[in-house]
Structures are given as structure tokens and as C-alpha cells.
Image 1 (cartoon, rainbow, N blue to C red):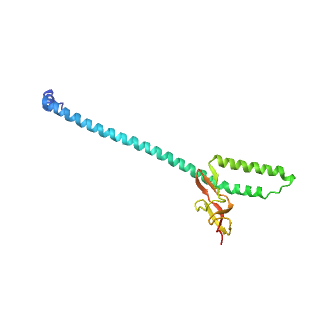
Image 2 (image 1 turned 30 degrees about the vertical axis):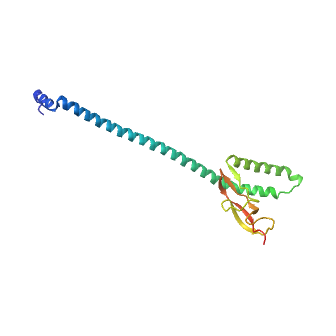
Image 3 (image 1 turned 60 degrees about the vertical axis):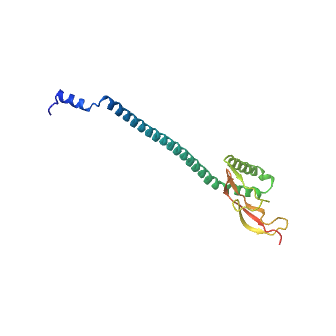
Length: 179
């Protein structure tokens, strides 16, 4: 490949050099273009940072929701055990020879209740309250002249909430009022 001579390089360089007035104008145009591009890139970077912050926040919320969902699923599996323990304690004989065994079961039941309370589980108060289909499941109705209609009179199976959200509805008997 032949080497270019020095004269042709100088001629080309001289031909590409703008005059002083045109040079200042073209430099200002280039500067304006560079500033416009810088503004676009800065705006793009800010949007990307905001998108990343929003993504992190959304991922954290989803992670917390998955954790709450898993906790609710596990607690729902423990509630029937708590029900069984309560039924066993309610029907336990009051004999002196079984007192130590019965005390042990009571301790286990209290431990289970306190563990559930520490996780945010609360029982749904139902007796004497107006029937609420979001918190109560009516299994049957009873005639009770002393209670107003649609009032819970008996709890068949207790209901529970987890951090204020219904985990399991209370199964109840509801008054029909006086006939």
C-alpha cells in the first residue's frame, strides 16, 4: 500500500479546517448537541435509577407477601391441633391421678397459643356479636327470645385472624330472635 505524501495530508487537513467564524459557530453547535445528549443521558439514568428503586420495593413487598402466605399456611395446619387440644382439655376427667398428665397437656396448649399470638394470631370474638359473614360461618340457627335476630349465640369452632386478616372463620350458631 503506498504511503500518502506529506503534501496531500496537509492539503486535506487545511481543507477540513473551518474558518474562524465558522469554527466558533460549529463549536457552539457541537456544544449544544453535547449538552442536549448529556441531558438525555442524565434523564435516562435517573429513570433507570427510579425503575430500579421501584423494582427493589416491589420485590421486597412480594417477598413479604410470600412470607405471610407461608406463615398463614403453616398456622392453618396448626389450628386443628389447637382445637383438638382444647377439646381434650374440656373433656378431661378431674381425677387426682391424672392431674400431672393434664397439667402437662395444659402447658403444651398454652405454649401453642402463646406461639401463635407471638406470630400475630388472634381469636375472633363471636358470642354476643352481630353475625358477620366475613368472620363467621353460620352452621345453624336457634330460637332465642332473649337475643336479637342475627346475633351469635354459640361458637362451635373458634375462628382466628392473622395480623387482622381472617385466617379461619368461626363456626357459629345464630339467633333467629323471637317467633
